[in-house]
Image (cartoon, rainbow, N blue to C red; front, side, top):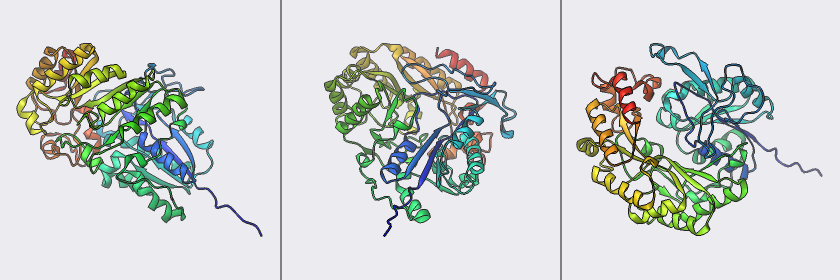
Length: 452
C-alpha cells in the first residue's frame, strides 16, 4: 500500500514598488507581510518572498537606475530609483516622478526563479501608491496566470472599493492573519492549524526576517493601534483596538534577531510605544539595559511625548535609543484641542528638558509639525516652527495627507481643490492636497528652509 504525503501549497509574497515624487527608506520593512510568511510557513506552506524595494541588489541594473543608492549603517537610506512617466492625473505637477525599487527586468527574473505558486499575496501601503501595486499585479498575472492573487495592506483597508480595480482575485482588508486561514481553506482545503489568538500579539510567530537577503535592521512590533483618536490619523481604522505585547517577550525577540542575524539596529513604528510607560516602555527598557546588548534603536514614527519623565528619558538614553521623533503637529492650542488633544506646548517643553537632562543633544530630537491641514495658515506653521526651535530641538515638516475615514476627511473634502475621494493619487502629501491661498508651494518651501 502506498501513502502519499499531501502536496505542499506554494505561496509567493511580494512587497511592491513605490511610484512617487520622492521616497526614502526610514528603517522600513514589510513587517506585516513577513508575519504572514512566518504563519504560512509554520502551517506547512512553501513560502517565497520578493522585495521590490530591496536596495541591495547585485548584478547589472538598467541604465536609468541609480546603481548604488546611499545607505547608512543604521539601516536607513535611499532606494534604487528610475524616472518614469507621471500618471495623467499628475501631469500638471512640475516635479519628476520615479519608480523606487528594483528594475522591472529584475522583478521578472526573480519571478522566473520561483516555482509556480498556488497563491500570490501582495501588500500595499499609502493609498496614493496604488499604481505600483496595480503594475505588480499585472506582471504577476502574466508570469503566473493560474495563481490566485490576493491584495492586502493599508491601501486595501482604507480604500476597499477602489482596490477592487486592482486586478487581484481577492482583496483582504485588515490583519491578514485573521482572513488568510479561511481563504486558504476555501481555495485549497488547506488547514492552518497553527493560528494566532487575535487578542494576543505574542501568539504570532516572529516575522520571517530570514527571507530578507540583507537584514541591515529589523523592525519590532511591541503593540498595535493607539488609545488616542487624533482626527488626522488612521491608526484606529487599520487596527480595531489598542493591543500590547509582553515587554519581556519583546526583549526576547530583539535578542533573538541580534543572536541569529547579527542585527544591531532595530526600529519601532508603534503608534503608542511610550503611552502608559509603566505597562511597556519602562519594563522593556530596563530589560534591554540588563541584557547589555550592543544594539541601537530608531523611532521614525512620532512618539507620544505626554508621558515623558526623567526616568523614561534616562532609560531611553541608556538603552541605546538614537533616533528620537515626536508627534507634536502644531503649537496652536485651538488646533491641538480640535484634533484630539494629544499634547500641549508645556508638555513639549517638559519632555525636551527631561531628554536633554538624560544626555540627548537638541539636534538629535526631531519634532514633527503638520503642514497643509484644512484651513491651516502659513502663520500657524511659522509660529509652530519658531516654538519648536525655542525649545532647542529640530522641527520637521510633515505634509498632511487626507485619509478616508479619519476625523478630518470631511474637512479635507471641502478644502481640497482636487477630487480626493474619487482619485487616491490626489491624496499624495507632496501635492499639499488641502493647500490654500495662504499656504502655497512657495510658502511651503520657505517653511522647509526655516526648519534647517
